[in-house]
Length: 602
Image 1 (cartoon, one colour):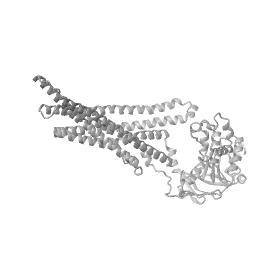
Image 2 (image 1 turned 120 degrees about the vertical axis):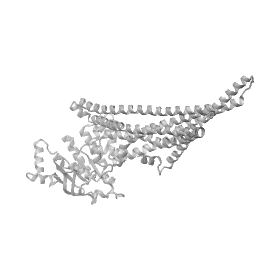
Image 3 (image 1 turned 180 degrees about the vertical axis):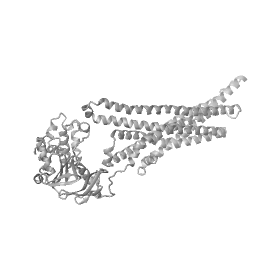
Image 4 (image 1 turned 90 degrees about the vertical axis):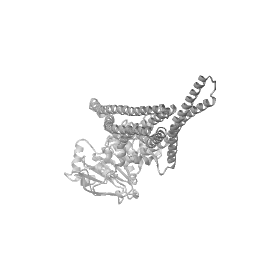
């Protein structure tokens, strides 16, 4: 993860970012040098004031009246320099933060975009098994942790080591090896204590994150399924589940807070003890005449100055450990590889309406071992033909469409479009060549126009309206108060099932692809609307290759050929009349059952 982070801090392709990092580091080291200068200026100022005080006292005792103007001016200059040095160090630090902010935000944006596009590039199997709430929490925590980790790596660890070396050298020169040894021992004990306690605390943070993921996932899942909760009066049950997750989070959070208090107290106790001992040593040196009062002030100032980054370094290590835990899942996501791999420099699919042929050649597929969906499935759809696909629930009708889009790949066999194996062509060109009306149309939480336009964002408003008219939606939208600017709600919940289905149909028409797939395209429509839309679709699909998957056999009665799926393969095929003529066939039985239940062809 650290190596990955450094790639964002020092990008090879962006010189401006690298220059900003160098300027930030220069300002940082300038601030450190000014910080070390501050105690020296204070020492000389104290010595000057002390000398002036002693001289004035001696002169007074001797009855001499003098005005120590030169000494007063020196002390004044040193104290003024002390203030300027502190202000300059603070200015360097703030300027460094301002300069580095661009680097941090650029890195966060770049990494967030990489995670986002990587998630979109993962196969459907990953997204079918993901938990949206937990995934959202993971990315949110990971993104927030990036800025802290970047700043810590660049501004805290190495510069603090530099400042420690500088302070220890000065202490050695001024007070001898004993001062240096004590300072180093204090830092060593401080570091070991911090490492040990932080390592112990890590388990609590892991448990806290896991509980937070669980709580977030339960909350989002429950809110997404609001209607289901209300239908079955299970609000109390959902609350209890959510509260159980929050209790786990509360327990882990209390342990995290308690162990943090222990860590902070231990750090302060260690440093305060070291500071007290070194001050006693300095006082003894003054008593022996080897050091001045200014030296005592300087030693105190140096150690106190060191305690700030060192104390921060302790918290930095603690927070970096926690941040890396927060980021671990996000970075682990980046290592997940899609099962659907595109060949390097794969050629685009060469396709037109006249060549839009589809062929499944001896295809076998299963989601899980021991439960095959297709076994040696084979059929061919000539260009410009309408093919109906029917069968019982779980027979693999929708799976066939997913495989055509290459969301899943067969364990054996080939799927060809225009004579080209879809494994060897560019995925974007393959999916652009196919328009679909899915069985479950989920819409974006945006306007009805945006959801219609999403079929092809390059099309004009007039073309969007024309597609809406073909889908029998336009007149209905015009009666709404805000018309095409009406918000559809999350997942399109403000629209009826029939309205959502018409949006899906309009999007497919707008995409204007050589191949169109209708997966239960009219299942949520009433018979009158279905009849009108089928007539419109007949015109829209003229000259195009179309696949119509349906439970209602009336929807596919006009197909050029109907394929009946059963037990993972095609058991029957033919036109509507041919299949009805086969007494006892599955298609015949389904037709009779639907007619008996009152479902009539439109």
